[in-house]
Image 1 (tube, rainbow, N blue to C red):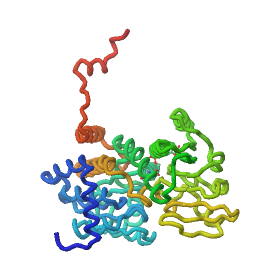
Image 2: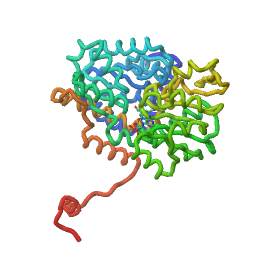
Image 3: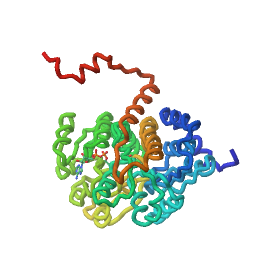
Length: 415
Ligand SMILES: NC(=O)c1ccc[n+]([C@@H]2O[C@H](COP(=O)([O-])OP(=O)(O)OC[C@H]3O[C@@H](n4cnc5c(N)ncnc54)[C@H](O)[C@@H]3O)[C@@H](O)[C@H]2O)c1
């Protein structure tokens, strides 16, 4: 390795540390090193620039692809990882923590200059920019992949309006992605982000989780595990019922807000904590968001209705509202687990990025035959990832006997 900066050395150590807990991705990478299934394929990736993502980029490069990376969020970038990717691994990466919106989009344009055959996206800003501003590049694109719930929703809306111009694989919808990453990953790392930012006690607190989808379930379960009294706020009656039977209090935001010590949003929706709710919070309440965009808390109104805003700790702003009450916002309302912490643990990103890797391989092979719509990850790939993960965890599972297989398909045998 040529002489690299201290920051790059730190980033490389971090990337190698994380790689130890990504056995499935490592296995794919090892296979690819020989077979080079991505030879000649250019990949532009817009993802959270973390050590886990670095390992995905390394794998894609090992598979023969030419890759470029930029950030999918201005606050989630790990600068040491950027330095290591650029200096130690020769992977062109354009991102810096806390970059402006202008720089964020400039970097998206830079990685599009690669003229990608495959786009790898997290939140659909890359696909959106490509369709709206760089549509001349679409003819080169075989297909794309999308990492998160919000991105999949946006892409399905594009497909519905018939404006999506190439096939995209909804990596988020693979079972080995959202059942583990969104639930256990967001669950653990959201609590981690809150703890790093506040250094407050979760035990005995009133902890409000808004949204009981995959992420919300994980956050609620981990907050309860730390001794919080958890209240779930939902709009879907079935999810709300599930939360109730999982043992949580269920309430409206209006009823829950005045009791909250912590409020965490995880809905993918707009202003689920509105000005009305913000005004109901007690003095000193902590609010944050784990959903993809920083739109879940009405930050504009919070700013308008505050006499004074100041940074009181790294990642925490104090809003002194006109009523005199103080509300504390973590990481500007951006994904708290990535902006105040380091994102999901490697063990779950192993499966998410194995899905990304195999989906990129699938597109490189099959992309030309696919239609301009959102596809699921093929079931056999999902199953294969689960199988490899279990092997890496040293676990064995049962196999159906031929007799059992036959029985499960038949209707003739009854009571
Ligand atoms: N922080 C992370 O690292 C991370 C990881 C994965 C996903 N995400 C993002 O988190 C968000 C949620 O993802 P998910 O997979 O849990 O989605 P999901 O669709 O499984 O769950 C969202 C839930 O929010 C509920 N909801 C919608 N509007 C609401 C409202 N006004 N009040 C209360 N509840 C409401 C929905 O009914 C649904 O149950 C998305 O933006 C997704 O992209 C973040």
